[in-house]
Structure formats: C-alpha cells, structure tokens
Image (cartoon, rainbow, N blue to C red):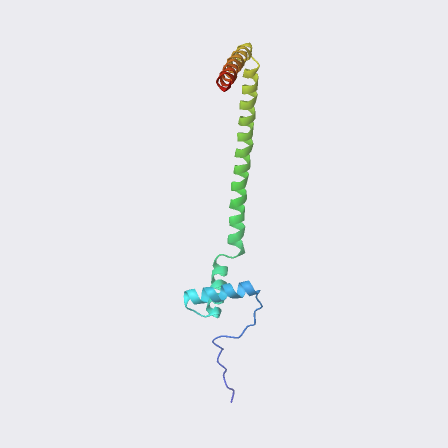
Amino acid sequence: MATQTQPKASERVVVLLRPKEKLRLEKLARTEQVSSGEIIRRSLISYGANGPSEEKKLFAEMNALLDKIRLSLQESRKKVDDTLKSIEARHQTPEYIERDKRLNALLAEALGAKTRKSKGTAA
C-alpha cells in the first residue's frame, strides 16, 4: 500500500543578506503588512515578469537615447564654437576697434573726473 505524499505548501530557504538589505526587507514587510517571505515571493514574481529580456530592452532604449543626447551635445558645441568665432571676428573689425577706443576714452575721462572730484572734496 503506497502512501501518496502531498506537496509542501512552502519550503524553508536560508538567504544571506547584508544588514542594510535585511533592514530594507523588514521595512517593506512592515509597510505592506506581510511577511518577509511574501516580499521575496512577490519579488520573484515581479522578476519573472520583467526579467532579463525586459532589462535588455530598457538598456537598448537608454543607449539609443544617450546616443541622441551625445549627438545633440556635439551639435550644440559646434554652434557655440561658431558663435564665438563670429563674435571674435566682429571684434576685429575696424568699426568695433574704433568704438572700443571711444568707450575706453569715455571711461578714462569719467574715472579721471571722478578721481579729480574726490580729491577736490577731500582737500
């Protein structure tokens, strides 16, 4: 007479966790008001749903976006360089140089007048 054994409802598994991981597991269990084992079971179910194939897809999407960002940055840098070159070229024009001389002369005159004024009031 053979006896039929019933499959166990659950089995004991020993899991080694770092102290911070254990604290996190316990906190999750308290927050969800379930056992630590239930948190681990849920994690396994979730991992099965979003396992490595989903991860690979997400990494591929992230890499594609990073490539677009890199290209955009390269284009932006080129535009900034072109703008700086344009500004530098404009600063070399005779009109700009003359304008700069006039502004410097006006500034020197204003500073000189201010210095003379402050010396006159101090005396």
